[in-house]
Length: 186
Image (cartoon, rainbow, N blue to C red; front, side, top):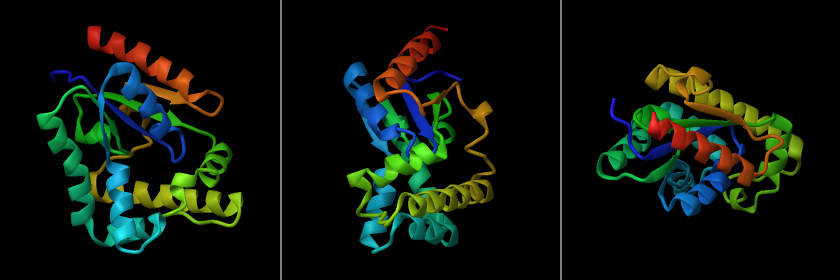
């Protein structure tokens, strides 16, 4: 399989994909494709929070397939970009596949304090946020197995796995850039 100048960035909820991708875009002078923005827009347009939208997707697999297919279609026409998507590694297997992990308590705190999430996630406490994240994670895993027969949390799917719990986004981006360069030159 021919490698493409594409980094697919997947990972746990609130592991830092969005922030790290912004650093990579700037450092590498790459573009971005975000499946999550597309999904959140669909959720907002339907008046649903993101967890309810995930449940909706389980009942409407054609929309999930459309969301994932959009990344692979984009990759056919573009190069030099980041895919910020849970199944970007699956949609574009010729990409450098990265998974970001994070401790669930740290993730819940990050998500709860992220103002960008408030339009599709509204919780009174960090514990409510955490419970929702656990529920959403399971829903996604179940849906991905049913539709695609893949487990996003099978680390053998990735070229690089990083635990971001104690790393800054800048440290994480630096690791990705160094390993990506090695991967490209192999």
